[in-house]
Length: 425
Image (cartoon, rainbow, N blue to C red):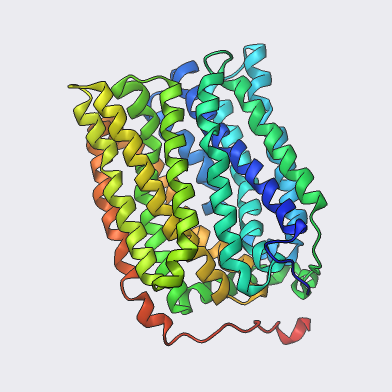
C-alpha cells in the first residue's frame, strides 16, 4: 500500500479538513453548554446528564465499532460520520427558532453525535498509519494536533462574541458547516486502502473480532499501561470539564465570552504542547515525556477550584488564574497525548488498529459517562468547588502506570500483522 508523506498535497488536504472539523467541534461544545445553562436554565445535574449523553456511546457501541471499522474503509467511514453530525447539529437551531427546543432534545442530539463520533474517531486514529509512512506517523500526529489546537484558538472566543449578537443555538450552525467542510476535504483525499479480508467474515465472527482487540490491549504491556493511565485521567478530567461551565458562568459569574476566552487560552497551550511533543520525544524517552505531560496537566488543573475559592475576593484574579491554568493544563495534556497516540500506532499491527483503538476507547472513554454523572451529583451535593478539588487530586494518580513504561518498551518486540483465522483466508 502506498503512503503519502506529511509534505504531500494529499496529506495537507486531509489535514486541513480535520482542522476545520476540530474548529467546529470546539464551537459546538461551547454552544451546547451555553444553550443548556443560559437558555434552558439547566441544573447542575442536568449538565452532568448532558455530558454523560455525549460519551455513553463508548460503553454501548465502542467495542463493536472497532470491529466494524476494521472491516470498512476508514476514509468512507469518516465521510458518512461527518455528514451525519452536520445534519444532527442542525436540529438545535431549527427547534430553537420554532420554540420547541428542550433539554431532552439536547440529550438526544448529544447521543446521536456521540455515536457517529465513535466511528469517526476510531477510523481517524486508524487512518494516519494508512495515509503516511511509519517514519512520518509522529510528525503527522503532531501536525494534526497542533493545527487542531490552532483552529480552536479563535473558535471559542469567536463563539462567545457571536453569542452576544445571536443566540447559542444559531452559533451551532457554524459547527454544522465545519462538519460539511470536513466531509468535502475527505472526499478529495486519496489513498490506496483496500477493504480488509475480515470484511468478508460472517456476522458470527463479530464477537471473535472484539475479543481479539481486547486481548491485544490486555497482552501488549505498553498499551495496557497506557489504557490504565488514560482511563484514570479521563475520569477525573471529565469530572472537572463537566463543571467548568457551571463554575465560570454561575459560581464566579462570568459570561459566555469569558468561557470561550478560557477555552481559547487552553487551545493556545495545546498548540505549544503539540509542537513540543515531537521535539521532546527526540531528546527524551517516551515515558519521560508522557509523565511530565500528565504531571503538568494535574498541577495546572489546580487553577479551576482555586479560581472558585478566590472569586469572592477578586473576579479579576479568578479570571487570570483560570486563563493561566487552562493554558498549562492543555499544554501538558497534549504533550502526553501526541506521544501516546503515536506510540500505540507504531506498536499495533495495521489490521488490528481499529479494534485496538476501539478497545482502548471503551476502557478510556467508557468511564466518562459515569464521571459526568458523578460530577453532577457531587456538584449538587457538596458544591462545585469541592468537587473540582476531588478531580484535581485524582488526576495525580494518572502518572503511576507510566513510570515504568520505558523499561517495558525496551523488552517489547515490533508488531507484525495479525494472521486471519484459517477459515476465512
